[in-house]
Image (cartoon, one colour):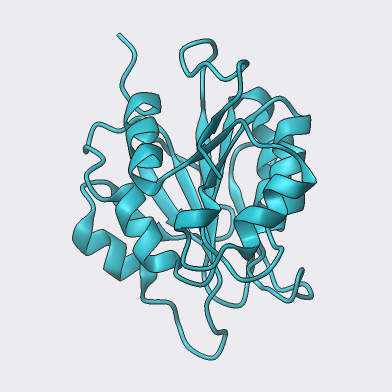
Length: 203
């Protein structure tokens, strides 16, 4: 599958307010390739759901904080969303974006066998941000995120999927592509370059 670009995708055409990223199997390495190297001046909040076992706390915030120039924190309930910050969903809780652009956590039943669920985050963020949202779906071994990416597109946001041919597990990217064609299908390096462009401070 060759990289695809939608003719309607223009990063300069509207103000992007936030980024949501979902990943599962192989996701830690993929997240590193996408996020490491973003400058401290990066202007957007990034919310991340990575599928991890629920029986122990996630070390992902610690791992990312060690490697990134951006502020990294484990998401907390009722936490206001701030620019230039990476929010990581804690294990065992769904992460959502509220209408007032704060975060919320819930212990409701798993969605797509996952808690946190990528779909839960993406659906709520799509409703909160509309055209101001970019959704990014990376490697993974189930279908979580496909419906959320479709919701982002339906609300006017932009969707980016890792090239399935380059994913450690291609099930998740392929599921999203089959449900609704994304704006972009890119390598991890190209996703990183896109984030650099989107997160530049506008003068």
